[in-house]
Every structure is written in structure tokens, then in C-alpha cells.
Image 1 (cartoon, helix red, strand yellow):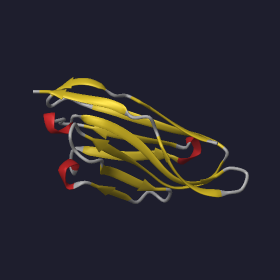
Image 2: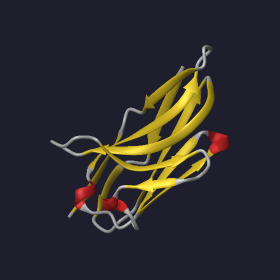
Image 3: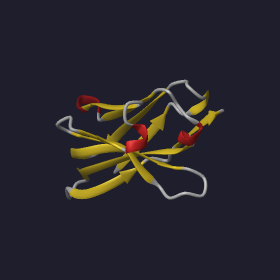
Length: 121
């Protein structure tokens, strides 16, 4: 019913930048919020940034001032601009959407497949 497709991951040197994109598709009635999580090797998944349909944002302390989340509601797409990347940012980044979808209007917590970001020192 719902698919989240991520793109933009890759290998970058410390201090560089990457821009991640995530597009949601399917039978979607509404999207309450979208966000980005990441999971580094040997660590639990953590919230990186989130944005509501109204534009309110939240960031993890570790990325404040470096990452910017934005969205295009018309395209059901969320972006994550990552600047001044550090080796500690290396992780698989997952797109998440809190939405209502399907013919029955079910509440759904959807996840993308993840995109790998590797930052070399």
C-alpha cells in the first residue's frame, strides 16, 4: 500500500556534504510526519531529524547546525541535507513516515529500505 524510496547515500570525506531524499507513494490519505533515523554498526537505531506536515522540525543534538530536514508535501517527499559530515555520521539512514493509508484508512508507520552513508576520515 505504501512504499518509501530513499536515495542519495554514498561515500564522502569528512567535512563533505550529502543530500538524502525519500519519496512516499501508494494509497496515502495523509502524512502526519516524516523523518530520518540512522543505525551505525553495533548501535541501536536513533532519530536524526523529523518534520511535521506543518513544517515543525526536531533534530538530534549531534546533528544540530549541520543537518537540515525539509519536505515537499505535494510530492510526499522529505529531504535531509547533511553538511560538515563526520566519521561518526557513518550509518544506514532510514526514512520513516507516520501516515494514514490504504482503503481502510489504517494508521501506518512506514519505513524505507535504508541508504548507506559512509564518511571517511
